[in-house]
Amino acid sequence: QVQLVESGGGLVQPGGSLRLSCAASGSIFRINDMGWYRQAPGKERELVATITEDHSTHYADSVKGRFTISRDNAKNTMYLQMNSLKPEDTAVYYCKAYIATMLTIFYNFWGQGTQVTVSS
Image 1 (cartoon, one colour):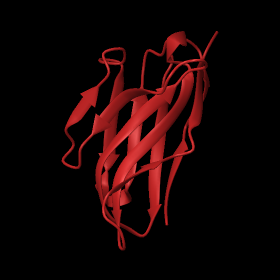
Image 2 (image 1 turned 135 degrees about the horizontal axis):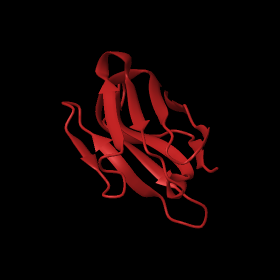
Image 3 (image 1 turned 180 degrees about the horizontal axis):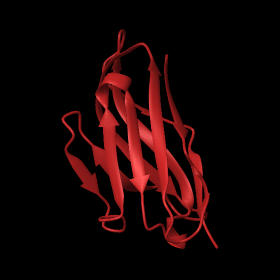
């Protein structure tokens, strides 16, 4: 069994910063690509940023220059440093990881989400 647990969300003023974490646990053999997604009320879930096993990154245009994705392979943990936050960044943020377990081939796992609210 594999679990992804996000943390670090909260309420922040415009221009502020937050750091999200996503920790994977369970019978993990290998983690390939990881990513952050977000879903605002009334909108579809959208990609925020992704990172490969060898740390190549990709960002949505809306967050380029403000957000930084990273990962610690030894800890099976991914991070999202969010700076210069805007009200339009308000959403539930989800992590996703492409994981092979000791018994299965690679499969996409999702976390439960963490709320980020940017408001004065």
